[in-house]
Amino acid sequence: MSGYLTTHVLDTARGCPAEGLTIELFRIEGETRRLLTTLVTNSDGRTDRQILPAEQFETGTYELVFHAGAYLDAAGVPAESPRFLDVIPLRFGMSEPSHYHVPLLLSPFGYSTYRGS
Image 1 (cartoon, rainbow, N blue to C red):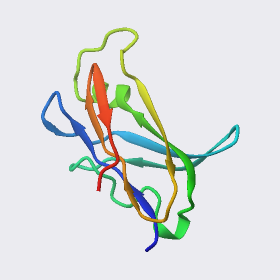
Image 2 (cartoon, helix red, strand yellow):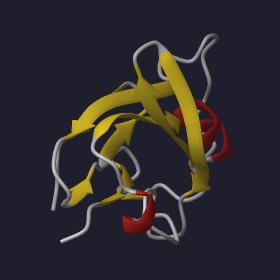
Image 3 (cartoon, rainbow, N blue to C red):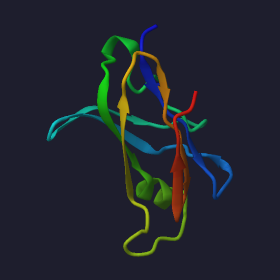
């Protein structure tokens, strides 16, 4: 089985998928943080393609960066200055070639994540 990475972002405050949220994927190697891709969520809160497809998969440490502040601004959530949640980095390890699914449950004042399926 080849490994790959997906996500799903849900806006728990509004009770809907988080459409139009920008996500960056970085590979972490020691002190080096290398950008691999930038994607935007679709109307289902998912990306149109795998964030890290099987042909690019390597075990190691990665970071997903969710641009929550820009999404909340576009969704019309009243902004405080500075916004409580703006950029949300999630650093995690992928230790075997399997499907890694890293969802984000988002509201203006909190978030949750887990390793999904």
